[in-house]
Length: 424
Image (tube, rainbow, N blue to C red):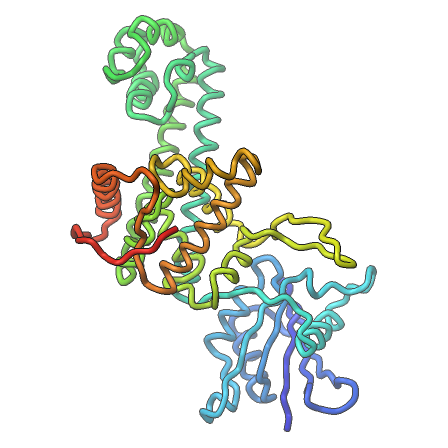
């Protein structure tokens, strides 16, 4: 019985498509065709694959150019068996490294044929591609992550501008984007020339005295108008970045309104919050259904020890690359979790750090967090702190902070009683 597979070598403007019957005896006989990447041409490709009774399609993950091809086939390609209700077609995304040929042997159609041969031999490393809705969540959260990084870069550029203008505000104020610093910078941008009047805009809780602030702002008396204009433009840029981040927060909260309970359960874990919970759901899904065990998730994220073994000797335990977004998030969460007083993560970190050092201890905590996240998502349970020094007041205070953050994002949260939990 025929079983046909198509391989697609993806380019920006062109696709090299081959089709072969892998159930036939002997060498594969390939049918070749070049296809454009416009919407109409992708629609014609889907019709051609259906007419040729193709059951599976495998393509290479070439930059972002595979995305429209995947989306078009996912939406329009319907194999005959699927139409008859006796089977279904499958889309596969192969990591480019697993389809490398011999050096100097890079050609479009041979690359597509190699995809089919290695898929049939189960030699390809396939990527996890979530469904349409989850891909939308990913797009929003990754865009927000980029804007957050832009905000950090903006703070560095702002400090360079102030140093060039001889305004030493960053020497006294730890957060240049905080409320006190922003009021003073706005006054400078609007033309204020008195250091004493500008210093009076600072919050009373600021550690620097009024005299120190006036001395740091002394250059405002004769600052060049160009610097005032540049500072005004910088503050407008900051306002735009923050407005976009707020809009993405609200949009994501609206999209995840049906997953409100999942967000709350993840936000209860030390080191995580509402924003981290939303990013985790966007990356792995609300139930982590694509990962049959916690070990599979840890391996996909890249927070487990690696193995480079030959002749029974393991030469490296370096962790795999994994998912960059999740790996970075878990490392940040691990650093925050070990600073949570009385948590089990603080206890484990203190036990591991003398033997492993800070970096490897944080990696071990990130691995533990990853397994815990899988349990919370896959088994629909809640986190229960079992650290050595947990107090009721600390638990209530953290719960209030989490409820306030969730409500700020637009979630509807009601205080909950004691529920079944899970130990870290």
